[in-house]
Image (cartoon, rainbow, N blue to C red; front, side):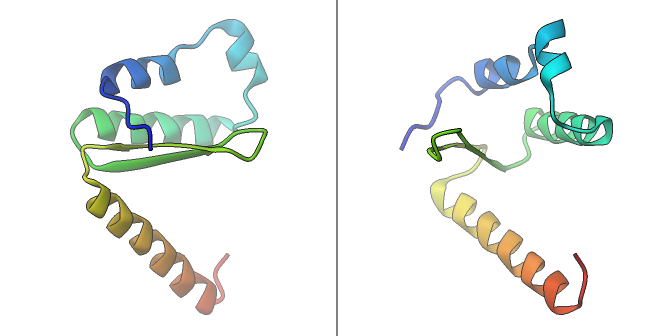
Length: 91
């Protein structure tokens, strides 16, 4: 498992925008804003799990401000909350 030691460097690379990258974004403006708010929360010390599936179906991920156990707990909470919403008929 790869966990970057320089979280600031990783976040800076994620936030670096040039005109070509911004023009190629498939995210809606509100999703771009939401992603920015999530990154801001990580910078303020909130725990996070970031998962990205590459084009070859390989997963890239990192835990920020969290241990592996805390990351697994967070993922469990996501699955549980999603299950509840689906059971309640929400999409």
